[in-house]
Image 1 (tube, rainbow, N blue to C red):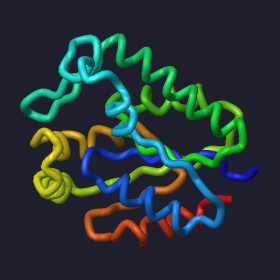
Image 2 (image 1 turned 90 degrees about the horizontal axis):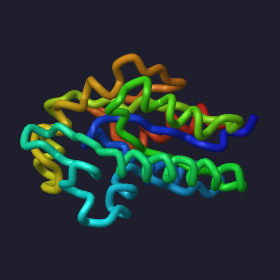
Image 3 (image 1 turned 180 degrees about the vertical axis):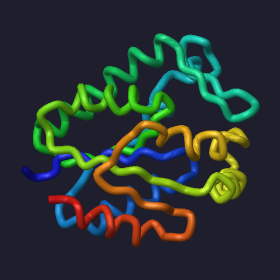
Image 4 (image 1 turned 135 degrees about the horizontal axis):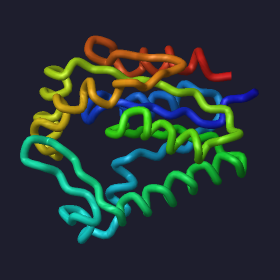
Length: 177
């Protein structure tokens, strides 16, 4: 079956967004790209820093409330609907819930051909990128570097610690049918 969706999971500042942009260039067909950052930006501003929305702790921890979860379910189903309508889609996400996060995507993407990709990066390297970005709570990258992968299985894994986004994208593209 032809791959319809590529789901990348990795911690903050692991390099997912760069890989997605490179994938859009190296894959022969057009692919739409959606990420967890797009979702958070699409939410009303009042939900950022709200117990019902999403909060970022001073140490980089992330908590989500019931309104966030409801909108996330709609977001996930909407992306699946686009793939079912014929769009090829790349998603970058952060599986803070480990296997449960993957299961929510599996449910939404049931019946679609999905390539599951783990994007790893050493916590210290991700932390350096986090500082350079300047738009993240310090500590998020280091705290997420390992936890997002615990108990999660993949079709392919890449490590951006010493490998550029383009090379990672080529590795992933080799697994797209």
